[in-house]
Image (cartoon, rainbow, N blue to C red; front, side, top):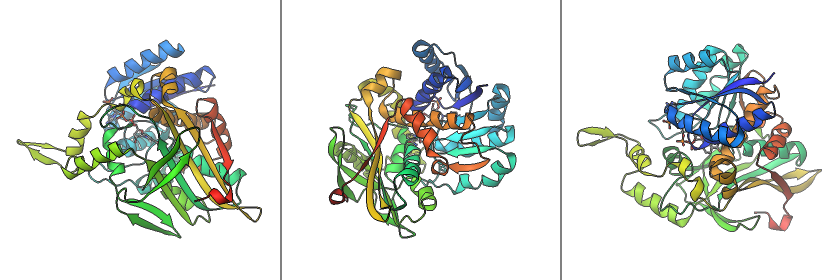
Length: 405
Ligand code: NDP
């Protein structure tokens, strides 16, 4: 029998997750769906859209996910099989605590980040390993696109295309344009903290640091997107992949940014608007980046404004049958198509579909071993089959030796 689920977070990604879970519930994947967030009116407008587009009723609720007793009261009332945490990384540990206390499974899309320090690492969540295992519960970490699909792509390539992997480059291209002077495609505070951080990549067993956005390369993207400048950044999936992809010698993450975005970001940083330390403003403490985030467009409103494609994937170089081999595994997604289907832009869509697919794997018992897991530790095949079925088709092509970089 299909099991009930509780989604927490009604932002840009939460809306996609709610729509996609409703769609999959029509195929029998989920039972009753409840969407809760800090602001219940946001949940209600998403529920209206789900009803209008798919004819599925979803329940809504208000919750402060930083308050564990409040979360537990909601979980006990809803009695879900699992919680999908689609709020912010700051809530991860509170929601994991509540899941343990109430005996339900857990999934998220981004690893924990302490609000007072712009540092994201898995150590805080990996520390829950024994408690989840002993409770017989599963916590699936990072079930978005990157992290998420990029981890599963890596596992699929290791299962089907390479015997050894030596070099991994994850390349995230948003070739779309929202026509705004400066806007982020997901939560502005989290996005700016991530982009302004020191760059880091893995090489021969060590982390190498780079100045923020100081390294770049050009990559020629498929499907008519063409060449784009990509910047080296640290990204959380590198941490688990460096451990789980045995034999890996180098792992890097790249993202495209327009010159306009980088120019605005540099000015905002120079004048102190991206700071995370509270400052005194006329007798009141404010955190500059939070004030800035409140002025920027809400990512959930960018759907009708965004045109163009995203292309996210992995270039992987290694050995097959004793010979050198390189492959590129990727998805291309069209912003306008996402908006036409469920009223969202492509970044929210490419995050929300894999969150639903990860939850579906857990609810169907395919990815349900007790413990705390990163995505690449599971069988990639059923997940990637569903990913394509629910809106994100993907492909894997060989890269000729003369084109490798
Ligand atoms: P938004 O800011 O649009 O939405 C976040 C939602 O969480 C809002 O609805 C907000 O509340 C709710 N929320 C925040 N704090 C609390 C709280 N204490 N209690 C309850 N609800 C709360 O963010 P996005 O939708 O863009 O991003 C959601 C998540 O997805 C983030 O963690 C982000 O890092 C991650 N992400 C992952 C990606 C990946 O590929 N893995 C890519 C993009 C994003 P309210 O109801 O008041 O609005």
